[in-house]
Image 1 (cartoon, one colour):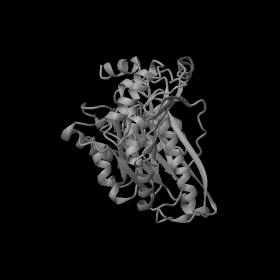
Image 2 (cartoon, helix red, strand yellow):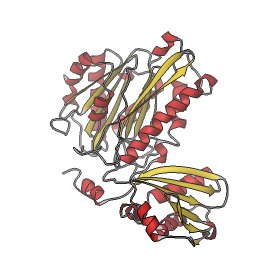
Image 3 (cartoon, rainbow, N blue to C red):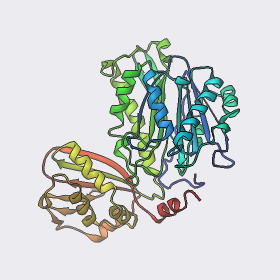
Image 4 (cartoon, rainbow, N blue to C red):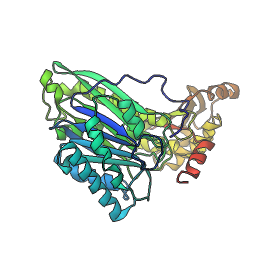
Length: 413
């Protein structure tokens, strides 16, 4: 965790309202870091629905495996998150650690271990000493309060430079419902479901199956459309919790994701996911520029996504942006290597609205000074038009700087 926030950090942090049925507390458990909080306990009221999406890595962490197994029950009473240790690639010891953590948490909260959800982030391959939670979770259970999401977001940070939170309020039936979210992630980000860790809370009365469908659909154009370095984490976890408390104020109970009464809620829910995923891109390790890549004119949306990700994950493209060089040749390279339909002689490229290449060649009106000035901006928009069809997609990334190498060169030491 850096003491200096990224220059791309949001200028304003939203006031995070209380959500009925959710209480939070953080503490220092000494997992890896000294003199900072590193464990979060969230307690939800009985009957809270839970949904989740996880990494598709073939080497998932022990907490990911635990959550996948418990998700089938559809109900949650508590969430325990620790930073500093991912509890990944830790074999039987890792599984024992999750079981012990859940046992300690269940006793502290007064619920079944099957209603405990776990997430860990940090170093891979180091055993997690779950005995450090003994006593800590009991104290946290006694001190949870209905509010400080910013403190919660800080407790789950690793190399993040700022806590990531987002909120939205919307009408559901006659009631006002709230959606709060937090996320962490700055490196090892090329999600195949969500991001490193993210947690969403709402008081809307939504059944587990409906919430699961909303979450699975919502990540596709938000968290799954973000990449920092092309590396998918072993720990990616996105959990959503719906307490249902708003039912007391007239919110209808929702059992199907296709319920037309959910229209405004879905929009707000996806806005929270989009906000958090953009913050992850803004906090890419060592990042100085936020990069939006739009591909249109592709054969299909899926094809546009693959091409956009090819550009976004190219070290040559990302270092050019860091150097404020509108090197469209590197973009052409990334388009060509994506393995998707493309026609060199129909290709057009622009940087921050300035077209630099047209119909497979440098734009006749190209002005080096104009483009160089545009590349100094903290936010860079790259648009690629393929001229082949109606497929369009957009992804977010950041530049690749020397600081990224420095952060990751000695991450364990």
